[in-house]
Image (cartoon, rainbow, N blue to C red; front, side):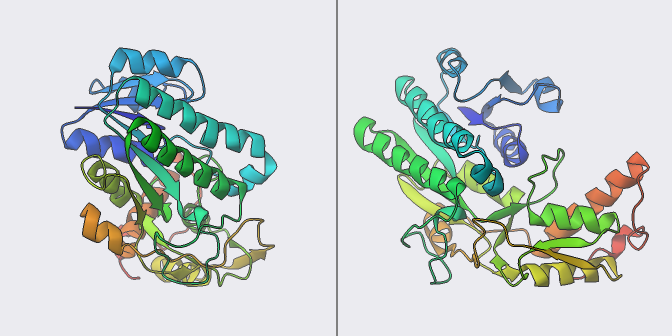
Length: 325
């Protein structure tokens, strides 16, 4: 079976591609990133450097005729969506429409779409269930909401099967940095360099953190389950940014200062997503604990800094200490 993964060279995309290969799928990656990384050299992956909004996408679908599509390509930064709402809409809405058109035209069996907890806004009822009223507080959240609506409309009009996955805050080891990598990556990177952690707002806002490998498993599961359904992919646990900074300080066994900055536009106050539906109907549940995820991230970050000869804090030279949460 052929699976075309848009955004397959990205953070979630790389882990998803690895998961699909482990399960025996033939994988086609479409990503606008330059093909100068190991994915483009992997003989088991067919790699295309292309933008989902371009006409090149049809040539790829026509040549490859994929059975399934996992649509991960997106503009994922909330601040950037305010700075450039046109770009946000072009990639997340127009790009999704283009992918949907190709899926219909080339008879793709199913599309799995990467949506976001940002579509919920601040509903006031927690944990948030999929049936909750949607009220996005950012252009990014709005673009994901509109993309979901187009997917459901294409399903009604053209009988295209789909599964929509609303991710919580995805974290994990990143091979490449974009400058918009999320609070967990920023905290770990600054901790490893002995710099203060930066918190936007008072730090009491909560987030639901889910490890990237668990997200990749959900993407693969959705190819064969959850037809015409929407699922939260989350840990189901809320953690404040102050609590997170405290956990990381325990992890590195030394004091780290915290610097507070004004809250960013579109930042939500509380995010805890129920994953009951995914457990019951998709057969998915998170398998990585916060301890395991943070350990992997921290060991990676310290290893990168050591390899590059960059300064790093000394208390984690014995990586075996990275156990306590």
